[in-house]
Length: 381
Ligand code: PMP
Ligand code: GLN
Image 1 (spheres, helix red, strand yellow):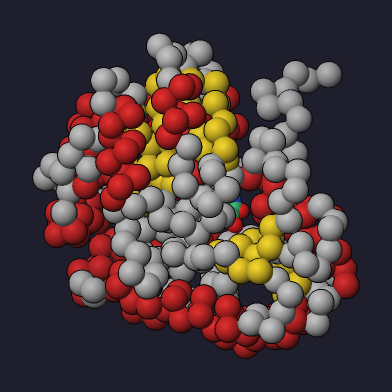
Image 2 (cartoon, rainbow, N blue to C red; image 1 turned 90 degrees about the horizontal axis):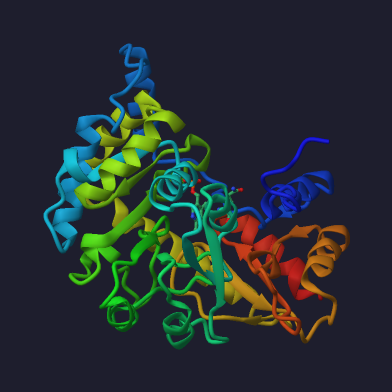
């Protein structure tokens, strides 16, 4: 028998639920992906780049034109140090590959990496494959961070703390006071902070996205991960980028050059051209997604689901304990089979799921008719 590097690891919950959704021809609000296309001008830019013959390898760190526009954007938004396109930005084939390169390059054998559950599914296995040890701390019931537990868990082996804002699956943002507290907890250490910011351009109401790179006491030992899959409604394009200080970027690139070498060229050229032509594009993403959240939440008003606050990303958490006491995995399957709506059971994001929790995650990055149709079905429960 072949030994396994990830014993006990099955197909991801996103693969499982989307497959079940397809099998039952259900409305798929499970795996997070938009139902609509990227901006038509962006698609034109990709087509043009391909026709213009820009179909060969990009430089390892990414197309200079794209890194320049991203550096200028970030400097405009405000960062604790001036972002240099050559020293600080690396384009990668999606955030998943970016995260993998970061763990492989910065985590040494036996290093501990603190993850907060519920946590996105690729973190823990990627840490393990890097020879690290995931230390999983549960978020408080209100979604705030357990800073006391973090303080107590820190020891000489602690290498990195992973934060995700806006958060998948909870839809919560890490605010200024949370960043300040994290800075205080890490003050006398050289622990790195990895901030997964793939939903950075989806923040609602009075909430604000604050990047780790805006925090003076953390930015010099931080790595931020972004994804065009989210920002451009193009999850299938697999394009993202890493922003980090020079000494960390150098180490990440050493590994990344052997993971993929470079991300795909026509989409990088197109992204640069599109962002240059639409300097305020990112703001439109929050407006669009907030409208979708509001439509979905309003349509569920008469249901028996209790909806949790959603400050960002494109996920709504709903407590179904007034409808059923089934565990969430079973209830999610039950919903596909009975009313034809697919969701994600939130227990999948935990090492030790809270036994009493009855939460499902709905992705609302869908066409309005889809959201209304699914809400109508959910209101019948
Ligand atoms: N981090 C989080 C929190 C995500 O939700 C996702 C994808 N949905 C990723 C990383 C991976 O992004 P990508 O598709 O660009 O690999
Ligand atoms: N990030 C997406 C989600 O949370 C899924 C991406 C994937 O399937 N790997 O639904």
